[in-house]
Length: 436
Ligand code: EPZ
Image (tube, rainbow, N blue to C red; front, side, top):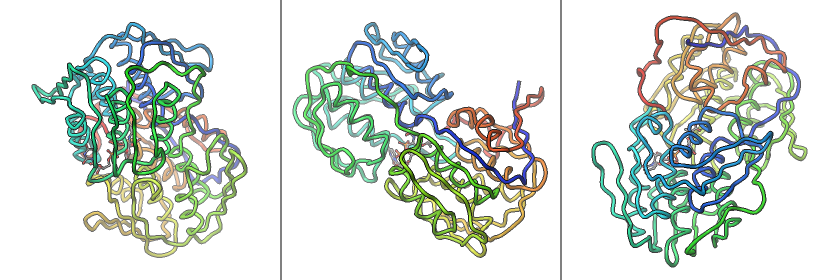
C-alpha cells in the first residue's frame, strides 16, 4: 500500500512543535552497544524507520531489544554476530556504523558494501583506510566488506581528506578498543559525534578533543555499558527544518525541546533572511518579517551551514525578494528537489554545484515526489506555503527522519492528511535505487 501526504497550503501556522531525539545521534549510539556486552538504556529516542532498521540489525547480531515506556533497552550480552546483510544495509547506509565496533570487539566483520544513493556516490574509503591504519585487513568480495583483525587493533594516526561524520564515528568507536593511542585529524565536529564520544566516555573510554577536528583516543582492553540511561540529544535538522516555516507560511511557532547551540549557523542565516528568532532555554521562537531578503549559502561540515538543511532553505529563499545562491559542497547530486520545486512554480537555475533561486514566487500545489529524506521534507515545506492542494509521495523516505510529521504540523494548523492508495510503484527522478 503506497501512502502520500495531502496538504492544502496557504495557512499561516501558529503554535508549539516538540522536537524529537536526533536520528543521526541515536544510530551511532546503538552501534556502540556492540563494543561491550551488557544492557544499555536510552531516553528521548525517536520512533523513526531508520532507528527500527538499526534495531533489526542489532537483533540480527543477537542483541535483545525492549522498549519500556520512554526507555529503549538494548541488551548485547548475547550479541555474537558479525555480519550486516545486504537487505538491511541497502535500506540504510548508516548500517556501516557496526563495522568499526564489530572489527574492534570480535576481530572480524562482514558488512554489505553500501551502494550509491540519490544524493551522490557516498564512498566509504575513509572508513576502510582508517581501519587498515588501525591494523585491520580489509577485502571487498561479492559486494561485502570483509574486515579481519585477529590480533586486535593497534592505535595509529588517521587523517581525513574532508571531515566525514560516520567515518569519524566508526573509527572513534574502533579506537576505544585498540591498543595504545589513536589520533584522528580533520575529524567531524558535529554534535552527534560529540554525543557518541560522551557515551563512549561513560563506557570507560579515554577520549580527548571532542568537538574539535583533532581527536585523541587511548584504547582500553574492554569497556562496559554506561551506568545511567542516555538521553538522546535533540534533532537539530528536524528543528532547523521546522524553524523555516514562518518564512514560508507566515505565522509564528515555538520549537520545544531543542538545543539552540547546535543551530547557531542556521539561526544566524535565517535572521539575515528576515526571520525573528529568539532562544530561551530549550525553546526557540520564530516568526518572519516580510519581505524576506535573499542569501548566499554554501553548505559545509559543522559548524558551517548543514547540507541536511540545504533543500529546506531553498524553499524559504523562493519567498525572498531577489536572487539567492545555494552551493552544495558536500554531495554531488543533492539538487533533485529542484526539479520538483520547479513543478510547483519555483524559478531555480542550476550551475554545477550552485542553485540560483529567484524570488518571490507564489508556489502552486502539485503532485510531487522525492527520494531523499531531506528533499521530501522540503516538499512538505513548499506544499504548506503553496496555493492549493499538493500530494507528496515517497513517504518511506520522510518517515526515516521526521517523527509524527503530520501530527506535529496539524497541531500548528496545517491542513495535512496521510492517505494511502493502491497503484503503481511511483519512483522519483532517479529510479528506485538504494537510499542515502
Ligand atoms: C552523515 O552522512 C549524515 N548521516 C548525513 O545525513 C549528512 O548529510 C552527512 O553526514 C553530512 O553532514 C548520518 O550521520 C547517519 P560524510 P555521512 O561521510 O557520514 C565524503 C540525513 O539526511 N566521504 O560526512 O555518510 C562524502 O562523499 C543524512 O540524515 C568520502 O569521500 O557523510 C561527502 O562528500 C543524509 N569517503 C563528505 O565526505 C568516505 O569514506 C561528507 O560525507 C566518507 C565520506
